[in-house]
Image: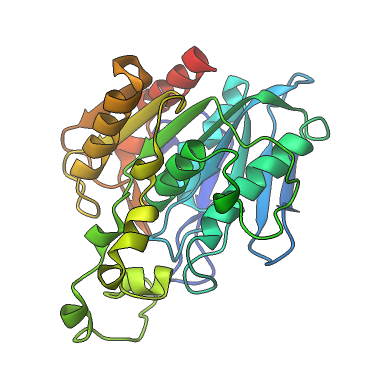
Length: 312
């Protein structure tokens, strides 16, 4: 990974399926647990845990949620490099998989994220994690879930039916939101336009009816549900310190989404509650084989983990 300027023992490998994202080789990481089931409704409800090479812990823990337009991505794809260097910085890093749009509809993926937090808190001693120092973050759709989970700890309506470890805490100490999208109406075409779009899914592309795949219906037909599923609606006093990052030239999600998130946190939680960073010339974090290298450079990892060091 020298081309990314990272001093980590990972490299990119080509996927078996040409339509998929590049995957990260984690074979040289010695202290890890892979594909740990945190719930039992779906094979997608698994996570990977990586520990620093030295120390007994318990370690501060960064839970990372990959993006993928709510329908794609993988816990071990190139997006994981946004978080992987944490194990070189004294953090346990958890990479989370969840049910995506073609398998299950919203808000089941949010239930998954919150189930994973409770699982990790309840089993923290087994995996050498410090349950008092959990942070959560993600890019693109992963940022949506990270913000939503951080904004709704302990709310039964967002825990899902028959939740695992229902008595475990869901709170986190910090949030990192990179290139996020929060207003689902923004990604949905008007119903009359959607009717003209191809219904079949072309691998490696984002379908025109993306939000209908994710929600099960066009959100413009159900604006109250769309409003309920906007995580910004749930941000209130007590929301954890947040780092919000976005590229000004983001071609996938307007940078105004991140600006709205930062403004919402400031208004409801105070000026010091959010660190907002917008980068001229930067694009979206990653999409299939398209990688905006700036996000993965050491300088930006220093920003992310420097923030976590300060607030954790």
